Length: 449
Image (cartoon, rainbow, N blue to C red):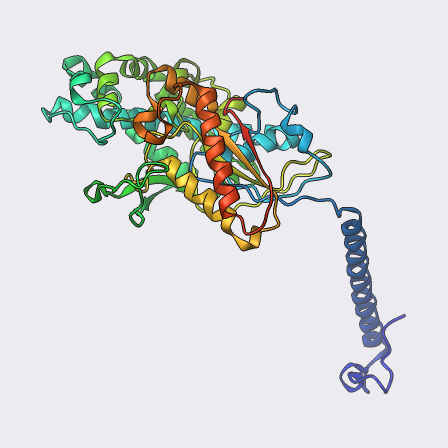
């Protein structure tokens, strides 16, 4: 039966049937009213169900994950296998906002495997762009030397003096490599277009100290603008239902680009393995192997026509996102309350957006601001000292922490003492900066899967 307003209804005059309504019109009107009432009942039912679900899911944990660029990798304890010590904190269900590609990738890999597999093909172009950009970065170091320019140093860090670093010597073989690898510039442009990536200028910030825990003046002359490839969201790139890489025409174009990359494979390997190239990169302080998106050690596998993206490739892939990303995951064991990622391997590195600022110092500033926030005063804090594997690799190469961190003093130049030192520093900051008394949990983690 259709809706029949009563005279006391304030909308009576508006909703009552027209006086000259025909039987056919009355039947059509009543049918529309029944359909509208059915839709209204469905809405009421869905609202009631949502309320009931919300009551049952009171234990959902919302996570805000914070960290500087390239700090977040995967949830795996450096000293324990996955789901061991760290997993003892897990409880209830989890629903959160995840900021940082690698954490997002690792969670999807572990807890949304079907969707993860659907997105795998979408990462192929991203990994290819990463490796092509690494080669072009190296060519940008080599080519000035081929033209007679003196070797340039971008960093004045105390690790090594010019006398300790050899001078690269480039010859005809390097010129030929540069010529044969020139097609990769077109590949880069095409991949950027296909992925929707743009060059985003990163502006330098206000003056900050350049050495962690020390008030050391910085060098204002080192200021320079940087650019980096950006996309709005990873999902726009890899989602099979929404990415611009899913048409047959686009797929054929990407296969053609893969052929070009495969054709340059031997020259890419030769360039990366060349002694003089390594010397030039060392002088320029370009630590490519320690950066996200580095795949040159896997050229043989990746620069092939039948390349298949691995889970580890996806976690290591690099493409800066500038949009807000929300990812909802539900599982029986959900992680943490308010984690913060801090890479421990970056004590000798500077921010790309402001090369005057030490990256470890930037992590300390972010950690201090989080601890001081009154909005997070009652929030449990968890700190991941991430990239312990890269720290171990760096220390084995002979890089000394005390050269960049004078307060480290004469402590052993080994992973465990370094992590212990940083752990105590971060915990001390939390105690001094928190508005209320609370505990902070600190865990060493690693980037590998």
